[in-house]
Length: 452
Image 1 (cartoon, rainbow, N blue to C red):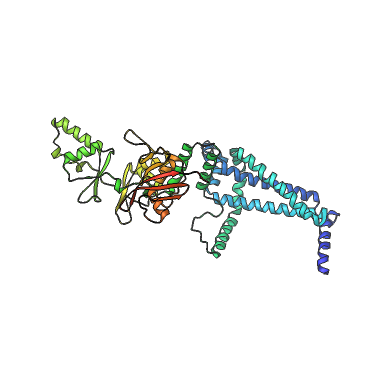
Image 2: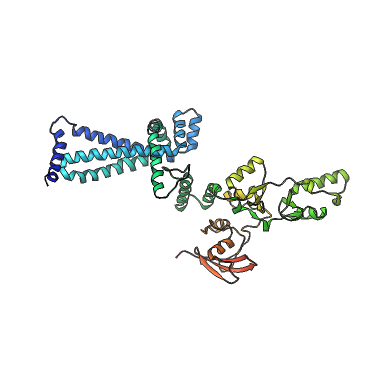
């Protein structure tokens, strides 16, 4: 009992002694220190917002003009995890120190009730002057703020770098105790930038700031790194191929009548692709024979000699990597194979571009191919139509993580191959099986339903 009653007395004397002229720190200096710490907290908060919201394109332009502060800001944002870690360490340090000083001062002035008073006052001060106000200013003036804080933040990053590494190690070790293993390169202190950008795009779209077509293009470009060639390729069932050993006359006729300009040639069996012929190359060769001989002897025409070597790519290649490969090799057409080398389909440059800009139609294409709107408002859809295309056309929200086509989605949800006449309701849509061929759903009727 003696110790319990003595503690408040000792604490009160220890804190009040400096206020009574005992040679301690003046309360005015403590208040000044608290104000200084709040200003530092405001700088940290504003810096984080500014460097997150700033346009790197504008910083790059300023850096190219010789602005060293802009270049320093770019260097800071290049290593976003270390930057955020340094800011978090600095901000938490000054906030905790300011709260401790405020609590000490409040207890000296108001006694035991000073704890509640200090908590209330510091919460209001930190929220308004160290968070909302600096973040609002930094968000509206990101370039100016970034240039001002680049030098002190660069110094802070250097000082706190060992601490940031230690924090990351502690986080990984702590998560490891609970069986959570972070792969090498996984960010600990910052979020995935791509998801943040996508979330911002969806938010602006929901608020009316971004129209649907612009949202689809921006999100489509971001998704290229997460989507594989197998998801957008033309399946081998739909590929138009020609037997290189067929009569040349029939080959020329088929090439001319085909809606495609690049057609694979095969020998012995359809999956043994030996080359890809371009319709323009055939027409040029025919035109050259006409000019030289005045006539065309199709029986002596060797179309296989005009074909180029086929280019095979794995079906697990991401669309972003395949886009880079198309641009690097200056090719527009590739055949897709699985891990066993079996032909799965084909991918073109246009297929990837359509993931960004939407369907690219010409005079030979049909808008919303494979989809027919019925009088009752439902849609008659071929089973091979991709879920992503339906989402783009009609702004639906059908998931495409487990299946690529609409038939694949129904099979995945039903956990079986449905029969004709069966109906299923999921994801706010009703799916009627209209036609089935062997083990393949070839046509469905989709009724879009409003969420309850």
